Amino acid sequence: MKRLLTVILTCMFIHGVQAIEITRYVKQGGTGKGTSWADACGSINQALDAIKVAGNGTVYIGPGNYTESVVIPNGSKNVNMLGGYSENNMEKPERDRVFITEGKYDITKTVNAALEVGWNGENIRVSGINIVKGNTGIVMRGTNIVVDSCVVSGCNTGITEDGGGKNFTVRNCVISNCSNVGIRLNNANIFNSTVKENGLGLYVTGCYIYNCAIIDNVHVSQTRGFTTNGGGIRMSQTVVSRSYIANNRCDGEGGGLHVSGSGYHSFIFQCIIANNTARDGGGIYADEQVFSAHTNSKNRD
Image (cartoon, rainbow, N blue to C red; front, side, top):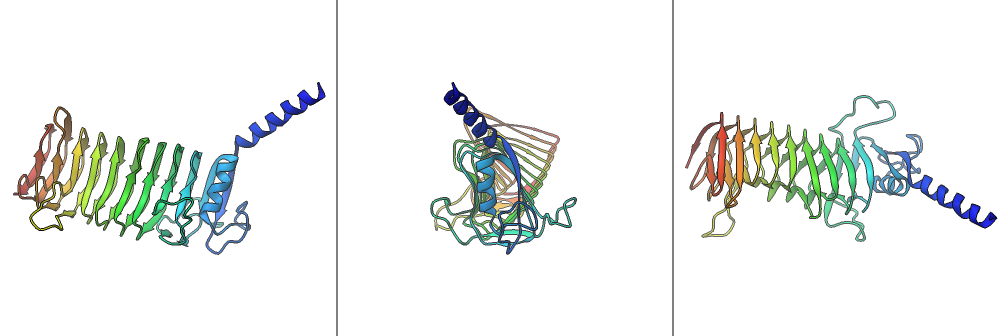
């Protein structure tokens, strides 16, 4: 009986540890365990690993330039990774002062991305982070993943997914100067964001795009004799609403939007589509049925 009681208490203890919500603090040059600002650690990954062990929690990241490839561990749940906070500023984060750049890769974790959300993650929020000069800026996996108030620039691909995920949200972000594509996602919500000066702006399927500016993206083939389709948005089964799509260019079809996918429908509502250029369909080129309402379009083929 005594042995059985010990086993039960042990199981209850382990279960309790898994359910603990903890907070970790990171600042540039920190050498502690991250339990407070005074004890802050210097590695974002160290803080995220502690959150994974505990079960859920929040990481506050102080201003600075962190040269590590950040990985939210596989199976992490209920994680908030929040940038721009400090000991003297916990109310209004300085969202333009936290940078993650490529460097210091852990080959057991990274897939060559500046920030990676691991497999089977759930309820993950990343906010207030600037990512510069990564091969890939952010790789999203799991369920209910939110990227909020982030800047991604100078990458090959800005924000993408790696399969097996759903319910992605990108909001209040700026994605710029990514040579391949700014955002490449399926079944995502993209709100209140600016996607500018990339190769292809967005490559999306089954998405909802609302109140976004997709501007100055140039998607042209680097191979002689070939052309590329879509300058601002290349999409299928997608809704675009109240967005500004302007000054985008491609050398194939659909300077502003290229819509494809036989047998599917896309919708464009209350958008301004202006000054986009392409070989065919400067504003919109559609291979699938498109429903458009209250949209102003003035472009060049």
